[in-house]
Length: 504
Image (tube, rainbow, N blue to C red; front, top):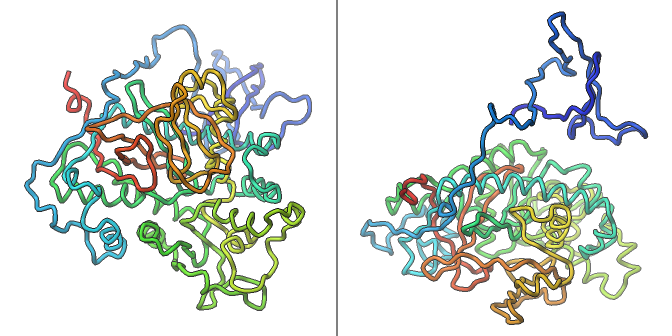
């Protein structure tokens, strides 16, 4: 789509009226039912001319929907066999112990250490195997990613305007105004997020949107391409080769103007994710420092948080989810609602600053923004179904268990859970699979059961990445279990032309 799009609602001899979304962000005056008026003139030959409001933005034309299909683009539904997933293997006789990741690069060395070798999967039987989808499925994945990002943001705005729904997200009330302010100030400052999908013979269904997750980026944007090069797999095209470039551009467009501190645990997986993102930040011209130990932070005389070198912590990217900071907040105010309601985030405290002190300090700009708590919370899935019932990419999701869900099967998920913890899959009153974890006390949502496709006895989850709200790459998570968790494997992914994927 090129340029600005608006809908004409009224046409007069000397003007038109239209409605539009993103020209002026204000509420219409009482009694007005249009966004703007544009001056119009009728020429002697009957041509109708409209004045453009912007000197550098001419009107491009009209789109009119009629029953006449003469100039229409007819949408033909894709063939169902284009939505399968195939497993293939490299024919190269390569020693599985041979190195193929560059351990001189710190992120790749960390990845090798975590995996116990130069592998993308922990199963030796799958070292040389990869998964392919059709070009048709890839186009649908791109469309779904872009469309769903917009739907999740629309639902976020709806939630923040309806406090009776926001209540269901179990977020501390003391944060509500800060979340709303974050949304008003930084709704366009989200760098990246990851969608989790089920790809089945009817197309795509989204499980959730991880707007506040750092996982799988390096596997998608670097490791699977290095695997393909080593195993001499040139079939089709890469599913993630553009991800790193898109991240660089996103960071180049960000508001960061000083040292960006990367906050992470000492966990190996978090380390290589942080290093991969750091590389993108630095290529965008941003100076970065990695912080693994909060004991190196301190308060200065002005009440600011500084690192060991005295540099103020002003810009932050984190591998932790926002809920981790909220856990600290809840723990400090446990069984004391009045203390939670009166909590002051910007006061200087004794001892080393905590995660909550850094992330919720007003002068600290955090990526991803605080408002991503809303679309990352699984309660948003029930809101989406309420706003867009029967949308082809969505699963029926409810705050309470309905007879329809009981009849057809459902997944029970904690609203703020992570890594596949505390999820149960239930069909005909039978628990098919369940995971443990630390979110057993969370409120839950009930989502229509949608089982992952199986390929060679592996359950496959398709993940796509959005960068600045647009599709930027994909990868595949695999597991013998029907539930994907933080410990699940990945297999390399390729996209191939339809006629090569499934010959006619």
